Length: 485
Image 1 (cartoon, rainbow, N blue to C red):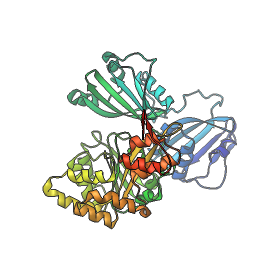
Image 2 (cartoon, helix red, strand yellow):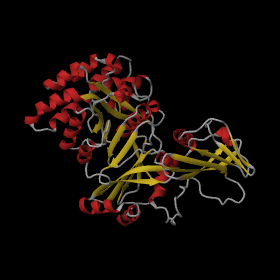
Image 3 (cartoon, rainbow, N blue to C red):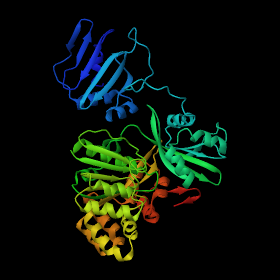
Image 4 (tube, one colour):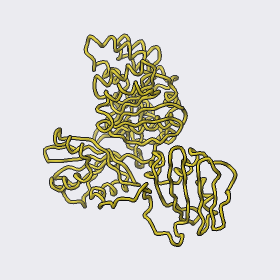
């Protein structure tokens, strides 16, 4: 039961609950107002109470201190909740939805500061996106001359009832939702990234491109609600990274491996347990973080800044404690990230590498040969951890992450400095007491816990012969087609 439910039970027709920062909740009736209880409600408490019952889009609006309005049902009563905030003072009013004389309004509508402009028809692409959302698919794939497909629990599935999408149809579907700056970029480079949102339902990261069939697009679903570290069941050793004062922490994995979700959970955990300044640099902004204990500035590349490297360089003059770099794509960004970690900041970043050792190799190999010795020395002192993850299909549906965890101890630091990266897996194997986990061990545990099929884990394993040997110790066999391992 939500905390506000107890108050809502008391409201009757022609009455109104008023919540104001710094005051006790009041019940307003025709004869006057009375305090519902004596405790004063702070702005943070008020917002938390509302977010507990608000739909995802309205939670984001409250987090960004934007006016919003939504319907809510509790104890057999339907109420309308209206929220506004000016500066640090927030106000919420709760009335019965069926109160006489009140015109019905659509649920989840945002309350405008001034008269709202008339809205046009909903983009037609939203029909497919709503259908995809209802299926709980992660991606919608649109390709000219093909039927739409979705990725459902890791597998591609065609919308067989949908017609083939012609090039003209594709343009008509995508043109209404692409921002002008992205349309200009698409004309010039033939690919672009932007965000799209269905108000009150879900947000998407969109990549639009051209291929031999014509225009195409991929919509990646971004959950409106923050996925917490507790829900992801992240280990204590990973959570301890949230309390580092400085250093570089990398979350790596192939595209679609859940890196953004893991980083989102880490930032949310920091937001709840520290009192610091967090700057995120993303392309585009995916998860929207509300202010809890930390101040969070989220910057989008090509919207709020020119590039990752430019934003990262500017961040040093913006008094950050923690910086999140959505993608460490190039030499300049990697170099500045390492320097930022060395100058007393905690930096989180991502790379598209599959193992912890290959992550260290990738970073060093980005630099010219004459700089690699210096970078090894800097990395040996600044790198604190690598979380390399891959998503596996769960038995019974859904997906789960297998995580390889490297924590940089003095032994690992020496190997990085001396260029003996190939020895890192051996040290990880003997460093399990420090929380280190090799990918094979993570996959093996998922199989033993009956969360992942042996065949799925085998496909995801990097060292396949060693993984098969591990399975044989538990009398588990892997069958891939006619091949019985």
